[in-house]
Length: 456
Image 1 (tube, rainbow, N blue to C red):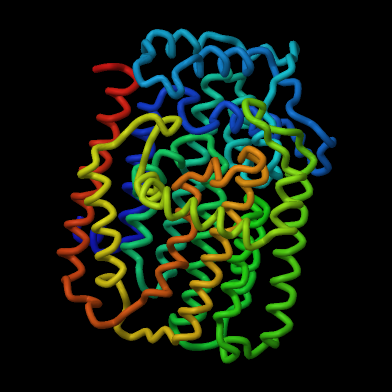
Image 2 (cartoon, helix red, strand yellow):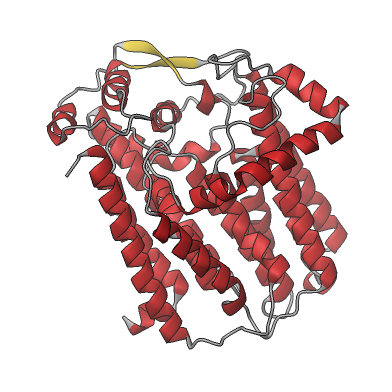
Protein backbone atom coordinates (compact mmCIF):
# COMPACT_ATOMS: atom_id res chain seq x y z
CA UNK A 1 0.00 0.00 0.00
CA UNK A 2 2.86 2.37 0.82
CA UNK A 3 4.33 1.82 -2.65
CA UNK A 4 0.92 2.30 -4.24
CA UNK A 5 0.17 5.71 -2.75
CA UNK A 6 3.69 6.97 -3.34
CA UNK A 7 3.49 6.31 -7.10
CA UNK A 8 0.72 8.30 -8.85
CA UNK A 9 1.01 6.19 -12.02
CA UNK A 10 0.55 2.92 -10.12
CA UNK A 11 -2.30 4.29 -8.06
CA UNK A 12 -3.99 5.52 -11.22
CA UNK A 13 -3.55 2.14 -12.89
CA UNK A 14 -5.06 0.17 -9.99
CA UNK A 15 -7.74 2.66 -8.95
CA UNK A 16 -8.61 3.49 -12.55
CA UNK A 17 -9.26 -0.14 -13.43
CA UNK A 18 -11.14 -0.99 -10.21
CA UNK A 19 -13.24 2.17 -10.14
CA UNK A 20 -13.86 1.91 -13.87
CA UNK A 21 -15.12 -1.66 -13.55
CA UNK A 22 -17.50 -0.49 -10.85
CA UNK A 23 -18.89 2.31 -13.00
CA UNK A 24 -19.15 0.05 -16.06
CA UNK A 25 -21.23 -2.39 -14.05
CA UNK A 26 -23.45 0.20 -12.38
CA UNK A 27 -24.16 2.38 -15.42
CA UNK A 28 -27.10 0.97 -17.41
CA UNK A 29 -26.43 0.13 -21.05
CA UNK A 30 -26.34 3.11 -23.40
CA UNK A 31 -26.59 5.68 -20.60
CA UNK A 32 -23.31 7.47 -21.32
CA UNK A 33 -23.21 10.43 -23.76
CA UNK A 34 -23.99 9.15 -27.28
CA UNK A 35 -23.09 5.60 -26.24
CA UNK A 36 -25.55 3.94 -28.66
CA UNK A 37 -23.91 5.73 -31.60
CA UNK A 38 -20.42 4.95 -30.31
CA UNK A 39 -21.34 1.28 -29.99
CA UNK A 40 -22.84 1.16 -33.48
CA UNK A 41 -19.72 2.69 -35.01
CA UNK A 42 -17.41 0.41 -33.01
CA UNK A 43 -19.40 -2.62 -34.14
CA UNK A 44 -18.98 -1.53 -37.74
CA UNK A 45 -15.22 -1.13 -37.23
CA UNK A 46 -15.10 -4.62 -35.65
CA UNK A 47 -16.36 -5.97 -38.98
CA UNK A 48 -13.45 -4.31 -40.76
CA UNK A 49 -15.64 -1.57 -42.22
CA UNK A 50 -13.44 1.44 -41.53
CA UNK A 51 -15.13 4.01 -43.79
CA UNK A 52 -11.76 5.45 -44.72
CA UNK A 53 -13.46 7.23 -47.63
CA UNK A 54 -16.98 7.93 -46.31
CA UNK A 55 -19.87 8.38 -48.69
CA UNK A 56 -21.00 12.04 -48.88
CA UNK A 57 -24.12 12.70 -46.86
CA UNK A 58 -24.00 9.36 -45.08
CA UNK A 59 -25.90 9.22 -41.78
CA UNK A 60 -25.88 5.54 -40.85
CA UNK A 61 -25.37 1.94 -41.91
CA UNK A 62 -26.90 -1.53 -41.80
CA UNK A 63 -26.19 -3.42 -38.56
CA UNK A 64 -27.35 -6.77 -37.11
CA UNK A 65 -30.93 -6.65 -35.91
CA UNK A 66 -29.94 -7.58 -32.36
CA UNK A 67 -27.56 -4.63 -32.09
CA UNK A 68 -30.24 -2.18 -33.24
CA UNK A 69 -32.84 -3.74 -30.95
CA UNK A 70 -30.94 -3.51 -27.69
CA UNK A 71 -29.78 0.00 -28.54
CA UNK A 72 -33.33 1.22 -29.02
CA UNK A 73 -34.86 -0.70 -26.11
CA UNK A 74 -32.26 0.00 -23.44
CA UNK A 75 -31.62 3.63 -24.29
CA UNK A 76 -35.36 4.19 -24.29
CA UNK A 77 -36.54 7.50 -22.88
CA UNK A 78 -34.10 7.54 -19.95
CA UNK A 79 -31.80 10.32 -21.23
CA UNK A 80 -32.75 13.81 -20.03
CA UNK A 81 -35.63 12.44 -17.93
CA UNK A 82 -34.35 12.35 -14.37
CA UNK A 83 -37.62 10.91 -13.13
CA UNK A 84 -37.27 7.78 -15.29
CA UNK A 85 -35.83 4.53 -13.91
CA UNK A 86 -34.80 1.18 -15.36
CA UNK A 87 -35.49 -2.21 -13.80
CA UNK A 88 -32.43 -4.46 -13.41
CA UNK A 89 -34.60 -7.30 -14.71
CA UNK A 90 -34.93 -5.49 -18.03
CA UNK A 91 -31.14 -5.36 -18.40
CA UNK A 92 -30.78 -9.05 -17.50
CA UNK A 93 -33.50 -9.99 -19.99
CA UNK A 94 -31.68 -8.10 -22.74
CA UNK A 95 -28.75 -10.53 -22.46
CA UNK A 96 -31.06 -13.11 -24.08
CA UNK A 97 -31.53 -11.01 -27.23
CA UNK A 98 -29.60 -12.78 -30.02
CA UNK A 99 -27.20 -10.94 -32.29
CA UNK A 100 -29.03 -12.16 -35.43
CA UNK A 101 -26.10 -11.11 -37.67
CA UNK A 102 -27.69 -12.37 -40.88
CA UNK A 103 -30.61 -9.97 -40.61
CA UNK A 104 -29.39 -6.38 -41.10
CA UNK A 105 -31.42 -3.26 -40.45
CA UNK A 106 -30.61 0.41 -41.12
CA UNK A 107 -29.39 2.36 -38.07
CA UNK A 108 -28.87 6.14 -37.84
CA UNK A 109 -25.65 7.35 -36.16
CA UNK A 110 -24.18 10.33 -38.06
CA UNK A 111 -22.55 11.92 -35.02
CA UNK A 112 -20.00 9.08 -34.77
CA UNK A 113 -19.54 8.63 -38.50
CA UNK A 114 -18.06 12.14 -38.48
CA UNK A 115 -14.91 10.72 -36.82
CA UNK A 116 -12.33 8.44 -38.48
CA UNK A 117 -12.20 4.84 -37.27
CA UNK A 118 -9.13 5.41 -35.05
CA UNK A 119 -10.85 6.20 -31.70
CA UNK A 120 -13.00 3.07 -32.07
CA UNK A 121 -10.19 0.53 -32.33
CA UNK A 122 -10.16 -0.50 -28.61
CA UNK A 123 -13.94 -0.98 -28.49
CA UNK A 124 -13.90 -2.80 -31.83
CA UNK A 125 -11.25 -5.19 -30.53
CA UNK A 126 -13.45 -6.11 -27.56
CA UNK A 127 -16.48 -6.55 -29.81
CA UNK A 128 -14.56 -8.66 -32.33
CA UNK A 129 -13.36 -10.95 -29.54
CA UNK A 130 -16.91 -11.39 -28.31
CA UNK A 131 -18.21 -12.11 -31.79
CA UNK A 132 -15.69 -14.94 -32.17
CA UNK A 133 -17.32 -16.68 -29.20
CA UNK A 134 -20.89 -15.91 -30.28
CA UNK A 135 -21.62 -13.36 -27.56
CA UNK A 136 -25.04 -11.68 -27.56
CA UNK A 137 -25.13 -7.97 -28.46
CA UNK A 138 -25.49 -6.69 -24.90
CA UNK A 139 -22.41 -8.63 -23.81
CA UNK A 140 -20.61 -7.10 -26.78
CA UNK A 141 -21.38 -3.65 -25.36
CA UNK A 142 -19.83 -4.58 -22.01
CA UNK A 143 -16.79 -6.03 -23.78
CA UNK A 144 -16.45 -2.75 -25.68
CA UNK A 145 -16.58 -0.90 -22.36
CA UNK A 146 -13.98 -3.22 -20.85
CA UNK A 147 -11.58 -2.87 -23.78
CA UNK A 148 -11.99 0.91 -23.71
CA UNK A 149 -11.34 0.99 -19.97
CA UNK A 150 -8.17 -1.10 -20.21
CA UNK A 151 -6.74 0.81 -23.17
CA UNK A 152 -7.59 4.24 -21.76
CA UNK A 153 -6.25 3.46 -18.29
CA UNK A 154 -2.99 2.06 -19.64
CA UNK A 155 -2.48 5.15 -21.81
CA UNK A 156 -3.04 7.71 -19.06
CA UNK A 157 -1.09 5.70 -16.48
CA UNK A 158 1.93 5.47 -18.79
CA UNK A 159 1.65 9.19 -19.48
CA UNK A 160 1.61 10.03 -15.77
CA UNK A 161 4.70 7.90 -15.24
CA UNK A 162 6.63 9.97 -17.81
CA UNK A 163 5.72 13.39 -16.41
CA UNK A 164 8.59 15.25 -14.69
CA UNK A 165 6.04 17.16 -12.59
CA UNK A 166 2.28 17.29 -12.00
CA UNK A 167 2.00 13.51 -11.73
CA UNK A 168 -0.64 13.63 -9.02
CA UNK A 169 -2.48 16.44 -10.79
CA UNK A 170 -2.67 14.41 -14.01
CA UNK A 171 -3.72 11.31 -12.06
CA UNK A 172 -6.50 13.20 -10.30
CA UNK A 173 -7.73 14.62 -13.63
CA UNK A 174 -7.86 11.08 -14.97
CA UNK A 175 -9.76 9.97 -11.83
CA UNK A 176 -12.44 12.66 -11.97
CA UNK A 177 -15.92 11.12 -12.03
CA UNK A 178 -16.32 12.35 -15.61
CA UNK A 179 -13.07 10.88 -16.92
CA UNK A 180 -13.67 7.58 -15.11
CA UNK A 181 -17.25 7.43 -16.36
CA UNK A 182 -16.18 7.93 -19.97
CA UNK A 183 -13.42 5.29 -19.77
CA UNK A 184 -16.04 2.88 -18.45
CA UNK A 185 -18.21 3.47 -21.52
CA UNK A 186 -17.85 2.94 -25.28
CA UNK A 187 -17.04 6.62 -25.85
CA UNK A 188 -14.52 7.72 -28.49
CA UNK A 189 -13.27 10.38 -26.03
CA UNK A 190 -11.19 7.73 -24.27
CA UNK A 191 -8.67 7.39 -27.10
CA UNK A 192 -8.36 11.14 -27.71
CA UNK A 193 -7.85 11.82 -24.00
CA UNK A 194 -5.23 9.09 -23.66
CA UNK A 195 -3.37 10.36 -26.72
CA UNK A 196 -3.43 13.94 -25.41
CA UNK A 197 -2.00 12.80 -22.07
CA UNK A 198 0.78 10.90 -23.84
CA UNK A 199 1.57 13.85 -26.09
CA UNK A 200 1.77 16.33 -23.21
CA UNK A 201 3.80 13.96 -21.02
CA UNK A 202 6.31 13.17 -23.77
CA UNK A 203 6.81 16.85 -24.56
CA UNK A 204 7.23 17.68 -20.87
CA UNK A 205 9.78 14.89 -20.42
CA UNK A 206 11.84 16.08 -23.40
CA UNK A 207 11.49 19.80 -22.61
CA UNK A 208 11.97 19.81 -18.83
CA UNK A 209 12.76 16.25 -17.74
CA UNK A 210 16.02 14.39 -17.55
CA UNK A 211 18.92 15.73 -19.57
CA UNK A 212 20.48 13.93 -22.48
CA UNK A 213 19.59 13.21 -26.09
CA UNK A 214 16.05 12.24 -27.00
CA UNK A 215 15.66 8.59 -27.90
CA UNK A 216 14.13 7.62 -31.20
CA UNK A 217 11.37 5.87 -29.29
CA UNK A 218 10.50 9.15 -27.54
CA UNK A 219 10.23 11.02 -30.83
CA UNK A 220 8.22 8.19 -32.37
CA UNK A 221 5.82 8.20 -29.41
CA UNK A 222 5.49 11.97 -29.65
CA UNK A 223 4.47 11.92 -33.31
CA UNK A 224 2.33 8.79 -32.95
CA UNK A 225 0.35 10.24 -30.04
CA UNK A 226 -0.14 13.48 -31.97
CA UNK A 227 -1.36 11.54 -35.03
CA UNK A 228 -3.81 9.47 -32.97
CA UNK A 229 -5.07 12.61 -31.23
CA UNK A 230 -5.61 14.51 -34.48
CA UNK A 231 -7.26 11.48 -36.09
CA UNK A 232 -9.60 11.14 -33.12
CA UNK A 233 -10.63 14.80 -32.88
CA UNK A 234 -9.32 17.37 -35.35
CA UNK A 235 -10.06 20.25 -32.96
CA UNK A 236 -7.07 19.22 -30.83
CA UNK A 237 -4.61 19.78 -33.70
CA UNK A 238 -2.90 22.81 -32.02
CA UNK A 239 -1.59 20.48 -29.31
CA UNK A 240 0.75 19.01 -31.92
CA UNK A 241 2.72 22.29 -31.78
CA UNK A 242 3.73 21.56 -28.18
CA UNK A 243 6.66 19.72 -29.75
CA UNK A 244 8.21 23.12 -30.48
CA UNK A 245 8.89 23.45 -26.73
CA UNK A 246 11.63 20.82 -26.95
CA UNK A 247 15.10 22.44 -27.05
CA UNK A 248 17.57 21.78 -29.86
CA UNK A 249 20.04 20.05 -27.52
CA UNK A 250 17.67 17.09 -27.30
CA UNK A 251 18.17 16.36 -31.03
CA UNK A 252 21.78 15.21 -31.46
CA UNK A 253 21.06 12.63 -34.16
CA UNK A 254 18.22 14.34 -36.00
CA UNK A 255 18.08 18.03 -36.81
CA UNK A 256 15.38 19.75 -34.78
CA UNK A 257 13.95 21.50 -37.81
CA UNK A 258 13.70 18.26 -39.77
CA UNK A 259 11.89 16.43 -36.99
CA UNK A 260 9.50 19.30 -36.27
CA UNK A 261 8.74 19.61 -39.97
CA UNK A 262 7.94 15.91 -40.31
CA UNK A 263 6.00 15.88 -37.05
CA UNK A 264 3.88 18.85 -38.12
CA UNK A 265 3.32 17.42 -41.60
CA UNK A 266 2.09 14.10 -40.21
CA UNK A 267 -0.23 15.83 -37.72
CA UNK A 268 -1.56 18.16 -40.39
CA UNK A 269 -2.17 15.33 -42.86
CA UNK A 270 -4.07 13.29 -40.28
CA UNK A 271 -6.09 16.35 -39.27
CA UNK A 272 -7.01 16.96 -42.92
CA UNK A 273 -8.17 13.35 -43.12
CA UNK A 274 -10.32 13.80 -40.01
CA UNK A 275 -11.83 17.06 -41.30
CA UNK A 276 -12.60 15.47 -44.67
CA UNK A 277 -14.32 12.59 -42.91
CA UNK A 278 -16.38 15.00 -40.81
CA UNK A 279 -17.48 17.11 -43.76
CA UNK A 280 -18.64 14.04 -45.69
CA UNK A 281 -21.26 13.22 -43.05
CA UNK A 282 -24.73 14.64 -43.35
CA UNK A 283 -26.37 17.05 -40.92
CA UNK A 284 -26.49 15.57 -37.42
CA UNK A 285 -29.06 17.89 -35.88
CA UNK A 286 -32.59 18.49 -37.16
CA UNK A 287 -34.37 20.12 -34.19
CA UNK A 288 -32.93 23.55 -35.07
CA UNK A 289 -31.71 25.31 -38.22
CA UNK A 290 -28.07 24.18 -38.46
CA UNK A 291 -26.12 25.13 -41.58
CA UNK A 292 -22.43 24.13 -41.25
CA UNK A 293 -21.45 25.58 -44.62
CA UNK A 294 -22.85 29.03 -43.90
CA UNK A 295 -21.54 29.00 -40.33
CA UNK A 296 -18.00 28.27 -41.51
CA UNK A 297 -18.25 30.87 -44.30
CA UNK A 298 -19.49 33.57 -41.93
CA UNK A 299 -16.86 32.74 -39.27
CA UNK A 300 -14.08 33.07 -41.84
CA UNK A 301 -15.57 36.23 -43.33
CA UNK A 302 -16.08 37.87 -39.91
CA UNK A 303 -13.47 36.34 -37.58
CA UNK A 304 -13.77 39.07 -34.94
CA UNK A 305 -17.51 38.51 -34.63
CA UNK A 306 -16.93 34.76 -34.32
CA UNK A 307 -14.30 35.28 -31.60
CA UNK A 308 -16.72 37.53 -29.74
CA UNK A 309 -19.31 34.73 -29.83
CA UNK A 310 -16.74 32.26 -28.49
CA UNK A 311 -15.57 34.63 -25.74
CA UNK A 312 -19.15 35.39 -24.69
CA UNK A 313 -19.88 31.69 -24.42
CA UNK A 314 -16.89 31.03 -22.17
CA UNK A 315 -17.72 34.01 -19.96
CA UNK A 316 -21.33 32.90 -19.57
CA UNK A 317 -20.80 29.14 -19.30
CA UNK A 318 -17.23 28.86 -17.97
CA UNK A 319 -18.29 27.77 -14.48
CA UNK A 320 -20.62 25.17 -15.94
CA UNK A 321 -17.80 23.76 -18.05
CA UNK A 322 -15.58 23.53 -14.96
CA UNK A 323 -18.28 21.65 -13.08
CA UNK A 324 -18.77 19.29 -16.03
CA UNK A 325 -15.02 18.74 -16.17
CA UNK A 326 -15.29 17.14 -12.73
CA UNK A 327 -18.47 15.35 -13.61
CA UNK A 328 -22.07 15.38 -14.68
CA UNK A 329 -22.80 11.77 -15.45
CA UNK A 330 -25.26 9.89 -17.61
CA UNK A 331 -26.35 11.93 -20.60
CA UNK A 332 -25.29 14.99 -18.59
CA UNK A 333 -28.45 14.49 -16.57
CA UNK A 334 -27.02 12.89 -13.42
CA UNK A 335 -25.81 15.53 -11.02
CA UNK A 336 -23.08 15.13 -8.46
CA UNK A 337 -23.25 17.02 -5.14
CA UNK A 338 -21.97 20.57 -5.40
CA UNK A 339 -19.61 20.13 -2.40
CA UNK A 340 -17.84 17.27 -4.21
CA UNK A 341 -17.38 19.36 -7.35
CA UNK A 342 -16.07 22.33 -5.39
CA UNK A 343 -13.74 20.14 -3.34
CA UNK A 344 -12.39 18.45 -6.46
CA UNK A 345 -11.75 21.76 -8.21
CA UNK A 346 -10.06 23.07 -5.06
CA UNK A 347 -7.76 20.05 -4.92
CA UNK A 348 -6.85 20.40 -8.59
CA UNK A 349 -6.06 24.08 -8.08
CA UNK A 350 -3.88 23.30 -5.05
CA UNK A 351 -2.00 20.63 -6.99
CA UNK A 352 -1.08 23.18 -9.66
CA UNK A 353 1.21 24.72 -7.01
CA UNK A 354 1.98 21.80 -4.70
CA UNK A 355 2.69 19.16 -7.33
CA UNK A 356 5.30 21.15 -9.26
CA UNK A 357 9.00 20.28 -9.50
CA UNK A 358 11.44 22.68 -7.76
CA UNK A 359 14.20 21.58 -10.11
CA UNK A 360 12.37 22.70 -13.26
CA UNK A 361 12.38 26.21 -14.67
CA UNK A 362 9.74 27.00 -17.28
CA UNK A 363 10.83 30.04 -19.23
CA UNK A 364 8.42 32.94 -19.90
CA UNK A 365 8.31 32.26 -23.65
CA UNK A 366 7.42 28.63 -22.93
CA UNK A 367 4.56 29.69 -20.68
CA UNK A 368 3.26 32.03 -23.34
CA UNK A 369 3.59 29.37 -26.02
CA UNK A 370 1.66 26.80 -23.95
CA UNK A 371 -1.06 29.37 -23.22
CA UNK A 372 -1.36 30.23 -26.91
CA UNK A 373 -1.68 26.57 -27.88
CA UNK A 374 -4.37 25.98 -25.26
CA UNK A 375 -6.34 29.06 -26.29
CA UNK A 376 -6.14 28.07 -29.95
CA UNK A 377 -7.43 24.60 -29.09
CA UNK A 378 -10.30 26.05 -27.08
CA UNK A 379 -11.26 28.23 -30.03
CA UNK A 380 -11.22 25.20 -32.36
CA UNK A 381 -13.34 23.19 -29.91
CA UNK A 382 -15.89 25.99 -29.97
CA UNK A 383 -15.57 26.29 -33.76
CA UNK A 384 -16.39 22.61 -34.24
CA UNK A 385 -19.58 22.95 -32.19
CA UNK A 386 -20.39 26.29 -33.80
CA UNK A 387 -20.31 24.68 -37.24
CA UNK A 388 -22.01 21.35 -36.50
CA UNK A 389 -24.35 21.98 -33.58
CA UNK A 390 -25.11 25.70 -33.19
CA UNK A 391 -28.21 27.20 -34.85
CA UNK A 392 -27.28 29.53 -37.66
CA UNK A 393 -26.83 33.11 -36.49
CA UNK A 394 -26.78 32.26 -32.76
CA UNK A 395 -24.94 34.62 -30.43
CA UNK A 396 -23.55 31.81 -28.27
CA UNK A 397 -21.94 28.47 -29.08
CA UNK A 398 -24.19 25.49 -28.47
CA UNK A 399 -22.92 21.99 -27.70
CA UNK A 400 -19.65 22.63 -25.85
CA UNK A 401 -19.23 20.33 -22.83
CA UNK A 402 -16.77 20.37 -19.98
CA UNK A 403 -15.41 16.92 -20.83
CA UNK A 404 -13.92 18.34 -24.03
CA UNK A 405 -11.31 20.17 -21.93
CA UNK A 406 -9.97 17.16 -20.01
CA UNK A 407 -7.31 16.45 -22.69
CA UNK A 408 -5.99 20.01 -22.34
CA UNK A 409 -5.16 19.98 -18.64
CA UNK A 410 -1.84 18.02 -18.67
CA UNK A 411 -0.43 20.57 -21.11
CA UNK A 412 -2.13 23.70 -19.78
CA UNK A 413 -0.70 23.43 -16.26
CA UNK A 414 2.83 24.02 -17.54
CA UNK A 415 1.93 27.65 -18.19
CA UNK A 416 1.42 27.95 -14.41
CA UNK A 417 4.36 25.90 -13.14
CA UNK A 418 5.95 27.46 -10.06
CA UNK A 419 8.58 26.29 -7.60
CA UNK A 420 7.77 28.26 -4.47
CA UNK A 421 5.25 25.81 -2.97
CA UNK A 422 6.53 22.63 -4.61
CA UNK A 423 7.04 19.62 -2.33
CA UNK A 424 5.67 21.40 0.74
CA UNK A 425 3.62 18.30 1.55
CA UNK A 426 5.48 14.98 2.08
CA UNK A 427 4.79 12.59 -0.83
CA UNK A 428 3.30 9.84 1.32
CA UNK A 429 0.95 12.22 3.09
CA UNK A 430 -0.16 13.74 -0.20
CA UNK A 431 -0.65 10.34 -1.80
CA UNK A 432 -2.67 9.01 1.15
CA UNK A 433 -4.93 12.06 1.19
CA UNK A 434 -5.55 11.99 -2.55
CA UNK A 435 -6.18 8.24 -2.49
CA UNK A 436 -8.82 8.63 0.22
CA UNK A 437 -10.45 11.50 -1.65
CA UNK A 438 -10.50 9.47 -4.87
CA UNK A 439 -12.21 6.62 -3.06
CA UNK A 440 -14.78 9.04 -1.63
CA UNK A 441 -15.36 10.58 -5.06
CA UNK A 442 -15.89 7.14 -6.60
CA UNK A 443 -18.33 6.15 -3.87
CA UNK A 444 -20.39 9.31 -4.36
CA UNK A 445 -20.42 8.73 -8.13
CA UNK A 446 -21.77 5.20 -7.68
CA UNK A 447 -24.36 6.48 -5.23
CA UNK A 448 -25.48 9.16 -7.71
CA UNK A 449 -25.79 6.66 -10.57
CA UNK A 450 -27.68 4.10 -8.50
CA UNK A 451 -30.09 6.73 -7.25
CA UNK A 452 -30.59 8.20 -10.71
CA UNK A 453 -31.23 4.98 -12.64
CA UNK A 454 -32.50 2.46 -10.11
CA UNK A 455 -34.06 4.61 -7.40
CA UNK A 456 -32.48 2.63 -4.55
